[in-house]
Length: 268
Image 1 (cartoon, rainbow, N blue to C red):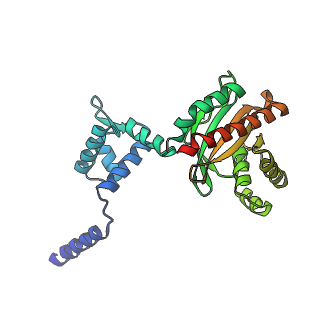
Image 2 (tube, rainbow, N blue to C red):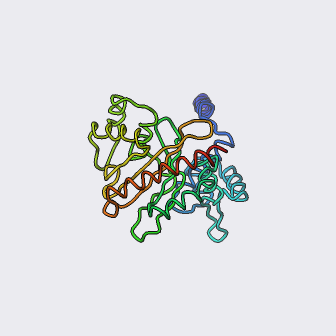
Image 3 (cartoon, rainbow, N blue to C red):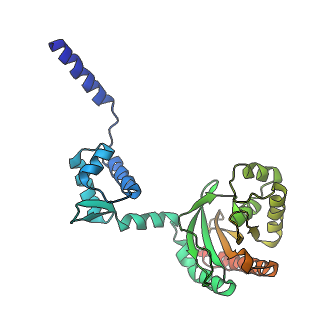
């Protein structure tokens, strides 16, 4: 009997020793991720059970997060949800250099002239971009995109513009296109031709490939260090823009690029 108890005890200790231990930083990050994905506010005990944390540790970290604004505590229900400070921190990560705020007046003027909504894209990985800012058109019928949306680098009009500026060959372009998912996939040869056209005129066009019924004109910009990190896309509903309008918006976009490169982006 005593031997059996000793074996059981030794086994439990071995299991405890082999279990991964999460430090306070790891627990805090786990709590923030949990609150961000939770469908409704939850109490300490429920959260600690879900994460397999000690209730006392869970309470201590949540209390600190609430004091700093990263969690929100409802005194009536005794439940926690994600706080506004976490949202602001996430938004800041979309545009660490605050570039969108600097160029916003110029983008707003562009929208007023062209009646096109404008997306400001930032390259975040080798083959990914994120929408770091968006200015809506004043038109009643207009396109809206959610800030924070991530896309493959070479998709849409802005993808064609990146491919053009990065100097991709036709073979490299075709290889990249095989892994992309489109609403209406473009022909590889046509995409390559559009990339070549972009190198000549400074802007690229997507008509219904990325999203049906949407026409997008785009260009890309370098930051003050010369890195190709930004993209601009002007977006209109297809039925409300003809070929002449596309050219006019494209030329306006190229002029906007020149202006930003000589002013805001040059002084970052």
